[in-house]
Length: 122
Image 1 (tube, rainbow, N blue to C red):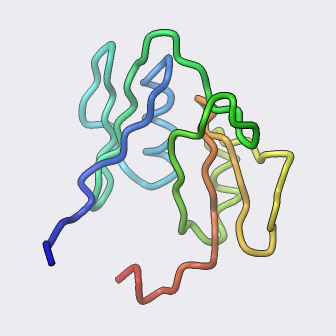
Image 2 (image 1 turned 120 degrees about the horizontal axis):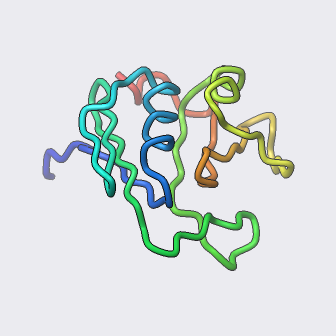
């Protein structure tokens, strides 16, 4: 079995600076690289990269016409924090007792959940 660690997550968007800043603010990171095409937020153990894509269209979740481009879990109790830095709560919540769905500033859906065992996070 290989010893592979997640080094980064990238999000397509039309404007990388505000999207990277959103993820840095939400997850307690800092912006470490800025260009017209790419902005990188450094978190404790991972990089979040926002990349400009020509003719970008945000996902249309739950409809599949433009598929979702990221799925992120494990931010228990963070609804108020997410909204305070620019997230929008999705009107459709299929299982709000288990997870909540939000959209980041570029329209990517993401989940906040309490369903991941704490021992998985250590």
